Image (cartoon, rainbow, N blue to C red; front, side):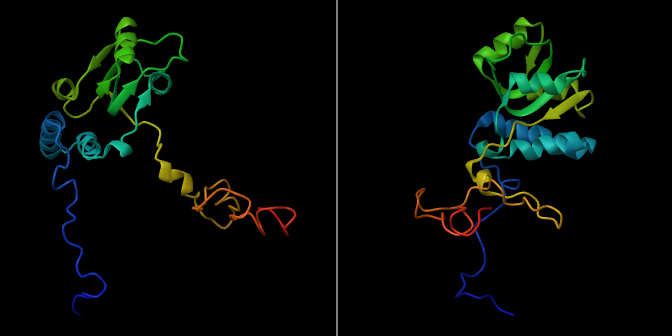
Length: 192
């Protein structure tokens, strides 16, 4: 077996970002070094997960609003919320509960509200000193919000007839003539 050069040859020049740090942000680069070291020396799943998430692109590290954060942290007093990404303010929330939050960054208003409630905003290097293995922490994520996700279906199983309901089709244009015939209108046979 040789290499099929006509089909494009070998896939080279595609090193995983886990091998080569793609970001140019010096702070993120240092945090990756720190957590890579911790995950190797402590065998902590928490540190390994944080390292993996620090490597992620911005689109794969969506922000988390204060409201959702407070909901996740209810009944978890004394624990530190850890979020590899940005924590943003939520104007719909009237009062912010007291909580310790560790994140890559905070919006100005989110930081003000957390501190005003008697909580604290800490950085990942401060967290490494407090909880090197991630003890007493709650690792959180923001809601997935990539545009591509609108095109993905649900899991296909034998008893799931709704695998592709509400899934956005890749259509050239949105109009009467585009994917609106049989199967898409009651007047043209049937409608799914």
